[in-house]
Length: 95
Image (cartoon, helix red, strand yellow):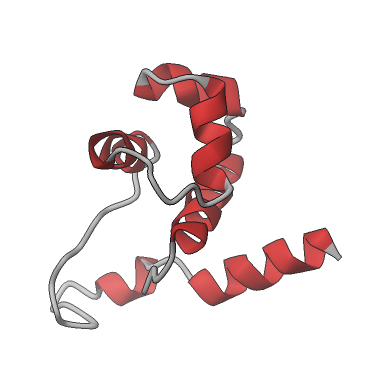
């Protein structure tokens, strides 16, 4: 999965939060931030503190992989998030 923009990251976070059936306030409490911070990150706020973003990813069980390989011997490509599907779904919701 390639995340190229803050909006891409926000879409992934929002999608995972919803799939886990968490509301924004519950996620905010798990991370130790305000609900407004969750709203901002989900909307692609470009200046979010990295430590808090990493904490959000951890709270949602979203792995961060910095390897340059597209797949690993353990087949992690199967569990990858389809960013294109998430973005398409988000765009349809705004139409």
